[in-house]
Length: 344
Image (cartoon, rainbow, N blue to C red; front, top):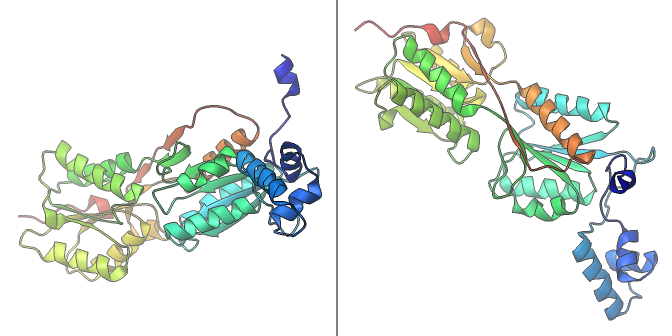
């Protein structure tokens, strides 16, 4: 009971301060300030003690131009993959709504699908003393965040799991959704189904390809190498893949598109094709309902909301093992996925 009585009401900003460093090193605040800011007037021995305290405590200098105060306002950083991708709009908005409900400020930025830029942005947010991070990973090695997490920065990964560290993650069921989408095409008579996806190093892309293969295997159907085309979402690459699959000696009669950007290009390519080709895409796109495109829809807003709620549980003191939460997907049959294969 005594421990509970001493526990703070919340843990916003519960990170080492210069006051903590000063106390551990046995020096004044001004001395710590001089060391942190590289100012003269500190003996080598004193500087060594201060640096040692900084290292032990995991202290980071606050680079914010100012600190918003009402007591203290919590600040959360959101690292997106691509701000231009419409999938991230509702996700970001949901995170912002949860942050606002908790009286917190949200700062977001884009990694532009570059692991180096992701790391640079995440650490820049930490240097500005955000209390928590929500990260949509571009890279597959997140050990660079371990010191920040130890220093008290609550961190949740969304859409893709963290690489090489154990951390909270909120994901869509990419494997199950892709398997359901391909099974839907099989149920409508298709036996030669092509898969066009993103780079296989990306977790979601790899899971969707795995789901495609699982559905084909479940139905006892072979998969030819020519029917599988992972790679960049560059429109020309995707168009080439569509043309080659449809012009092969044994052309595919249906396509599964691995994400929204791939699907947009596939829709355009199929519009130029002389005969109907069945299509199911992973992710919804604008006007897909009017175009009659069958999709596996994931709830981007639910991903963002769940991740943000998980983050604030951590900030409010939840001390539990990291958890992976997987949200289900929904098949929306609109016509393109129900086109039958051509008559033999």
